[in-house]
Structure formats: C-alpha cells, structure tokens
Amino acid sequence: MTSTSAGTHAPDPGSEPENTGPDTGSVTEMDPAPRIAPDVEVTTDPAVPTGSPDPGGPRPVLLVIADSLSYFGPEGGLPADHPRIWPNLVAAELDWDVELVARIGWTCRDAYWALIGDPRVWAAVPRAGAVVFAVGGMDSLPSPLPTALRELIRYVRPSGLRRVVRSAYQWIQPRAAILGRPVALPPTVSVDYLEQCRTALGQLRPELPVVAVLPSVHDCAAYGRVHSGREPAVRALQAWSRRCGVPLVDLKAAVHDNIYSGEANPDGIHWGWDGHTEVAKAMVKTLQEVR
Picture (cartoon, rainbow, N blue to C red):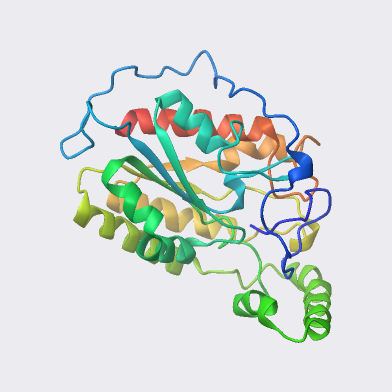
C-alpha cells in the first residue's frame, strides 16, 4: 500500500518519501499491548509439530512478510516493535517472537523477492512457528500507469526533474484510477508468486504452517475510491487456497467498519487501532487452527 508522510493526507502512489521510516512525531506514547479479546482462546502449551523449534529452546517466531498495512496506524508509520500493530498483538497472544519484514507498496512479487533475498527471513525460517504472507492488497489496486514507472520515479535525477515526474504521476493516477484497470499485479501472477513462496518453504520445513490474506478495502482518493480488482483477486486466492490448503484471513471482514468509521488513517487505506485489533483476533484464531 502507499503511504502518507504523516498519515494525515491521502497516500501518493507516485511519491518518493525522503524518509519512509516511522513518523516519530506520531509515536509519543507506547501503550501496553492490549489483550485481543476475552473470547479468543489462546493455547498456553501448544503441541509443537515435528521439525518445529525445540520447545526447550528459543521461542517460536511469527514470520510476517507484509505491506504497510502491517505497521501503519491511524497517524502514520510505526516501528516494527510497536505493541499495537497486529503482528505484535498476535505474537503477544501466542507468546512468540515476531519477525516483521515489510515495506510500503509491497505486492506478492515483493514478498517472494524478500523470501529468497532477505537474510532476516533466512534466519527466521528455522525458528518459525508459522509464516504469514500479508500481501496482495496492493496487487488488486488500480494502476493505470505501469507499476515500474512508480517504482522508478525515485531514481530520476536531477531532483528537479524527479519532482516534475512525480507531480505528473500524482495528477494522472487518481484520475485514471477510476477506470479500475489494469491492476498493479494480475491475480494469476499474484497467486503464482504466493505458490512459489509456499513451495520454497515446504522444501525447507514441510510441516511449517503458512497463512495468507484476502485483500483489505479502502476509501482512498489516490485510487479513485475504486477497488474493482478486489473480487477477481479474492476468487483467485480462494481457488489457490482450496488447491493447496493455505488458510486465508479476510482483511475486509476485519477492517471494513474501521476504514469507514472516521477512526482509521485519513489516507483511506491504513487502519486505526480497532482495525489492527480485529485483524489480530482473526489471525490468532486461524493460527490456533493450523498449529
């Protein structure tokens, strides 16, 4: 998903943030990690599947490969250890560690590249209790201008020319997005990358649970408030899930009310705290079923 500089303006699909790290001005208080809900039962002494980390050794790791929905809150980007983002809520419930590998705008293709190219992922896989691919939402967004163009804007030099190109992209994108197509990544391609991820992990840890997600929803002006690519993506992901047995967490069901409540990030894409809590509840439930 795309970001805003401080979470107070609509996200800019063509922007090149000079600093895409946390908005330190928005992280003034670190509230204790809340328990998710009294009706979510958490196994306190789960059975450890064959080949999983030794129960007498280090705690299992929840490996999350994701886009910015995993670490943006109602006011902007947050550090990976912020206690209120959903990966940390889930890890707290399971009493696991968490390794969050994520970036703004990541698609299923980027998740695959991270899996095969990021040494943090390599280090986490042997200890992983489960892997969550929380990507696919960006894939389904309208991208009438080539995705590669957006990615390459940051490399344009000199800086004056880069600003001109970025401004032109920002002007065209929301106006062309109302067409709804093409999307950033076709559903068949998204699923193919996820399947390559699943297969690669299966060769290393055949017993390792893998979870994916169905796309979230948005109310974002930068994408023309259009999301006609979501339903084709959902159908493709559900068909893959049935073939391969990968459980899916429906982000739309978890965050729809929060996105339209006025309590989410004003950019119309990223969630408020209630959204993170609902996603964590759904993810904990799914992980308890597959462990």
